[in-house]
Amino acid sequence: MVSITNASHELTRLGSRLRAARIARDEPMRLFAQRIGVSIPTLRAMEQGVDTVQIKHWANALWALDRLPDIAAVLAQSESPLDLARRQSQPQRQRASRRAA
Image (tube, rainbow, N blue to C red; front, side):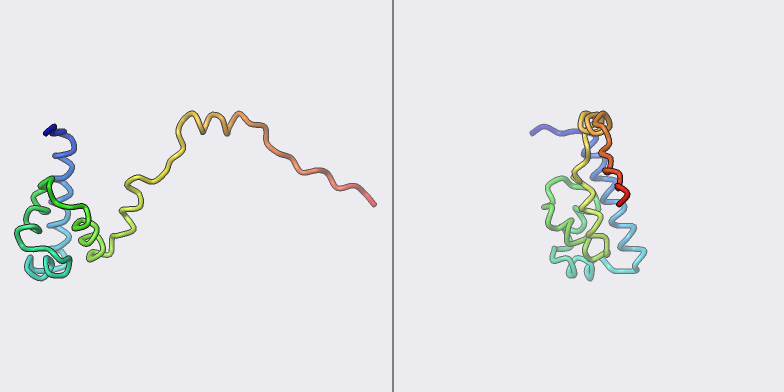
């Protein structure tokens, strides 16, 4: 299995932020795990950034923290540099002038 160092590092950071958010809410591990539908070992794995945790568990955790809309930005469609250049090079449409009646 190929391991990408940057991805592993980001998962570890994400897990740390998850743990910090749970603690900031003063929510015990047992209760939070129950709320998101995972076992305590799975929650521990999430907080450690283990890469085998299912994405649905992360989505449930984001929902429990009122952060589910954040997931929409992960692969949000963006305009490529080529599309942006094409759009900028097209002439602006102008309205027809009104004729005096």
